[in-house]
Amino acid sequence: MAHLDIHAKAEIGKSLAGFTLGEKLESFLPYVDQSVDGNKVPWTVYLALENTGVLLYEIQNKNGYRIYFSDPKLEFVFNKQRTLCIIIAGTGYQGEIFEGGIKIGSRIGDIKHPLVLDDTEDVHYLADGAGQFIEGIYFVAGGLELEEDPDSIIEEVRIYNYNLI
Image (tube, rainbow, N blue to C red; front, side, top):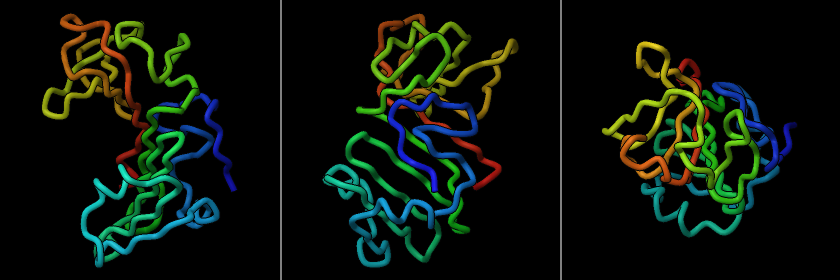
């Protein structure tokens, strides 16, 4: 079983906080202290905000699962086959999220790699030489173009593999 490591370095499209994409939900169950059935409580936003421990939320009709850690702020998204496909980290996660010592709380302008803003979701993706998104990671920081606000603070990072969804 993987173990929570708030200092573990993020690996693009692979791992974050000591957990690896592709792991099964069952390996997370020992951490869970509260479960909610989405067929009985259909809205997750308030549950996640009010969570003070480790909450397992079963999406309606067993369409997937989410686990919310309150401290550090982590969210694990599982598909309906119970496979981890997205890891989200925020406040309290102290690992390096990108090369050069970039962490939650760093300036988005400190990332020494081209970024492109997806203004439909207000997130920053790494970009290749042609300005195309590099899949596997994105950052939440202010929601403005890098040139407009390089001092925006990275509030959240998401590691994902859409092939697992």
